[in-house]
Length: 60
Image (cartoon, rainbow, N blue to C red; front, top):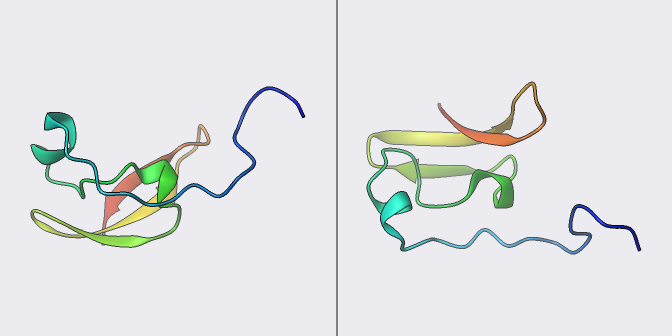
């Protein structure tokens, strides 16, 4: 096995730290909820891949 990204499935787990609870987007890491739709504080969001290869929450 090489060094780098995880090969096992990551779970979409709700976070309870201040960083996640104070933002408008969902309290989940977007990279662990790839292509999922979740509810944020101001509407629905979808986790989408951006141009540099990481997942971000985008309002639907």
